[in-house]
Length: 619
Image (cartoon, rainbow, N blue to C red; front, side, top):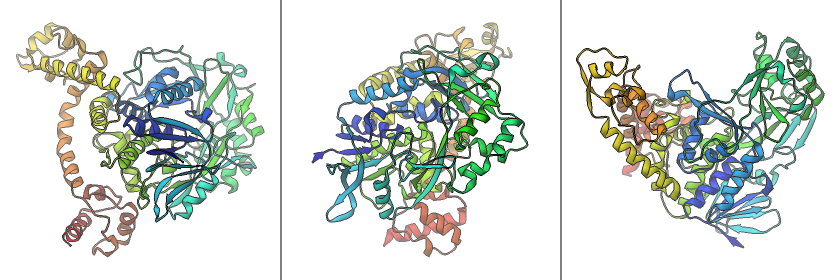
């Protein structure tokens, strides 16, 4: 029997990040995937990032994860979303060459010390002979056993999965790959809270059959930003995307075919993602609209495939051809692979601790779509947290818990473990109440130090971060220089020459004062990386607003310091409604602060919970 510290099941975005994060801490890690050549594959959209999602990519990168650097290696189109809005809600997003992305991930995993890739079916969890709730490894489809102190399940959409395309229903979680039936059955036998969810993917088009000249073109950004500051820049040639729209004829075709859609025949009963609905759902739910935008996104530099973002569908292939050919520029388009839907098992994330450990099953962690989320970015972020904490579990160290006031990672996990889900969870900037603090551009400042302390950051990033922090100290020190309004105005800044004096940092709070104005009166940013200088300027701009949030955050952290023991019987607390009791029992919040964030919990209920917690602690 081969022995490891941590075994990760699944080679998708969650599994790759989990395996790499655990290995970076020094753990011996096995990454088990049914197909080694599919590790790191982008199974749906050839894009990374976006609104909220781009923040997660930057945060995973700040903790030395893989996704940001792989995205830059593969990026064939860069676009910063929400550029007309404030930095806090801007979303970096790239289109990736699928082959380059997968190759980058596999290369980084191959270079990671302590990580072994095993191509095999993960058949079942292995448990201790004297304790059926303590995981001790994994049984492979061949019968071989792997031993480990922790297992991370990152099974994506494969647990008891079925694929739907029109009337056709086949087992599997992705075209050409089988479902994880045996493992799925075992998890149900453990009496874990398991439900079904649905996702979908569009057809893949032959780009050579698209009339690009008839379409609106969307070029790549002309800025020079990257997903990871450790990337050497934009290394791949840049391509354009294009936009078309559905129309009344498209909608008529879909309405006439709903009796052949598994979403409407009852074949699929699970909920899909609200923020990424199928084209059928769009037409039915928004019937008054005259059209919906469709983004035509290239899948690679040497690949003619095009991804029609917005055409997620499980209608029969011949109907997919008809509805696509009703759109401008697609009149002669050919489908290479039809779209389809997938229905799969997931665990109610309220069964998880904030470390992403499964409550009541010692040594078992879960990450990604098995936890009810959707998207590469959400999966990668959970994978990093689960892999890091699995390694710390084996090493006898405390879990690393991410705070929702300091990271989108913390927001997502807090939402999942406290609120649960009724549909696949997607990260949105609106979910973060402290989003002014959580900009994509300051992810390293917020999180890299935490990663270094946790032992999951490599030498290259540690050196980069040390240099960056030294630059920050020098720059902020120089920005304490006091300059008169007269001098600022004379230098060209749009301020009133009213005789006032302020530090340069305070001048940066003015909406019309920027880095260029500071550079004309000071060399504060002379030896500072451009992105760091921009970050410091944004910090100054938001400073008055952030100061007002500090009292809220202090209260949040004070409540989070009050631990709630597992033994608390919420059903026995007088004054709680039955609905409150059910939600608290399902979520089992770890702290009073977490209890306050469970939906529907009132201040009076919190007082009752606090009294019960103190009583239980005194017994």
